Image 1 (cartoon, one colour):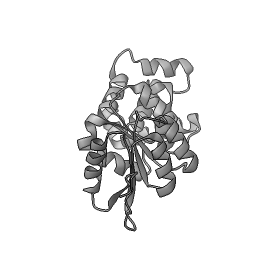
Image 2 (tube, helix red, strand yellow):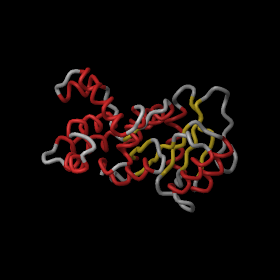
Image 3 (cartoon, rainbow, N blue to C red):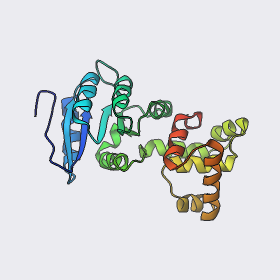
Image 4 (cartoon, one colour):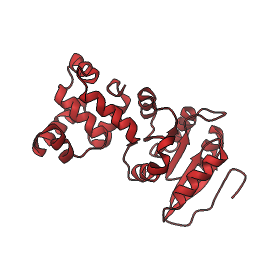
Length: 227
């Protein structure tokens, strides 16, 4: 390992770049991730600038990026990384559970949002989810967003009804899709048939001009709906 925390991965491994200014935290993350067979931490960065340099050098499969970093801030570092590798999934790692921050991170191109308090049980799941081309949000943030659509009167439904793009029912379904629920789960939760849910999903994509579940999720996370 070099002075920037560089490792040489074996072929065909899932490679991960860790960026956090605390060495103990980086070691803890490395230990959790490398316990998974076929995964390798290819480099560790202690600043935003190092994260950009090492991402360009090693071209990792996933980046785990602390939201608050010394030097170049994490959002700026992520933008530079994504400028070089637009499809590289970045998992932001933070103590802040603000839904406004979630919205900002997804708007800037992040693919995942993991609370540090959830790391022990969720870090592997989060990285695996991003490596499969999906988006990830910590369970506690998901629970808060679900509370928004089950509380009456709902600020989410009011916002959508006012702009008249989606019906309240479509907004409920969009929220559940964005939080990772499948059509069967949504149907059970809302007491609908799976066929009806699928029809709503198709209509939502048409109305918003989107093509797939990833697009719906990114739209939701970067819109006013998730505030």
